[in-house]
Image (cartoon, rainbow, N blue to C red):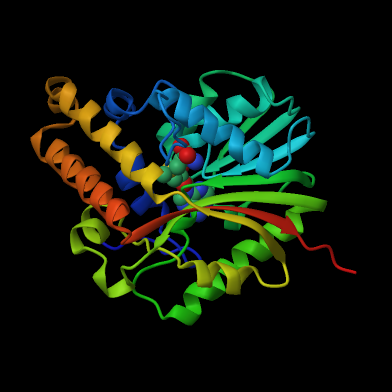
Length: 290
Ligand SMILES: C[S@@+](CC[C@H](N)C(=O)[O-])C[C@H]1O[C@@H](n2cnc3c(N)ncnc32)[C@H](O)[C@@H]1O
């Protein structure tokens, strides 16, 4: 990947599109029917779809947005709209806004023509809300909010800007539910070059301490779960689904890309299994100024 237009402290739109705009058809071969592209929440005997829906409901409850008037999904919409749909169809939310940098994902959601949904191809940094949100959810996007080649102090600054912006958008008493991959035993210097250059260019991971520092005084961390084994399992499911429809995948994106994804899914599964990486689900309560 060549270097592209920089924006704020995170990955550029081009870097994001490098990954997510590959082909909706390719992703639909190995994701579940809801096209959710982040770690699921497993229980004994669940199917991948059930585990994904359980995860969506977990975040809806953690952000306390059942019946809310207006909700924001940053890094929507569960890839291709699953969270937005769940909010308005099942959780009684009147309207939901989704932000994504991926044209393919936005087009998918817009093709449903649902007036309750507003999907925007814009970074959270450029978003200007029409009114305050009752709650905010962000799944699997925080990983793209810092670059791997900048000093740690700048990384914390970018994260703080994110938390401070969300704080300003939330109604008093509002909450945010955040899901992100984080460093576990691995450190910045250990991040595999293949992942940084070929899979998620211009992206870096936070540590739990980074999040705590960046959110300090803005959000109270009410609950944190580290569900890394849930991600190991999700990645294994994706990997075996991809292997099971390899012929269609090859026809869709070619040999080199399929091999790249097989390598990435298996590398990540091992990373979560061994604890090199964690999967954090954080419930954050807006601290209202006195
Ligand atoms: C791994 S996908 C997760 C999608 C979805 N939340 C899910 O769980 O299925 C990451 C998403 O974050 C979005 N994203 C990355 N950086 C962003 C930014 N600065 N502003 C808004 N969305 C961003 C990407 O476009 C992509 O939709």
